Length: 66
Image 1: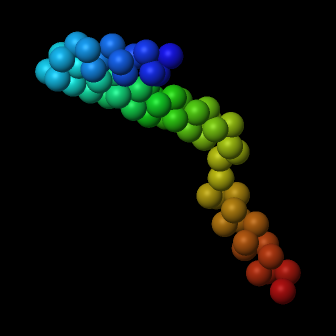
Image 2 (image 1 turned 60 degrees about the horizontal axis):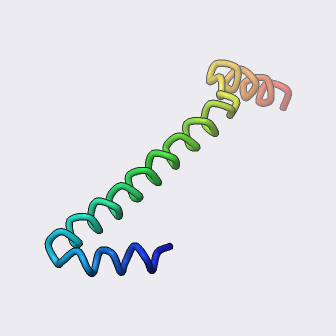
């Protein structure tokens, strides 16, 4: 499929083929970045959030026991 697309772009001429090739590559890159961003948002949302007050209180209790 990629060979047929490359052959078609080559036959379209340097300007038209270059513009189409750039559009295809830029579209694929932007789509990949969007998917990575979507995956990152999904992973970060599932992580438990650290409660600073609870963490400081637990640290205080540990030091108090020593």
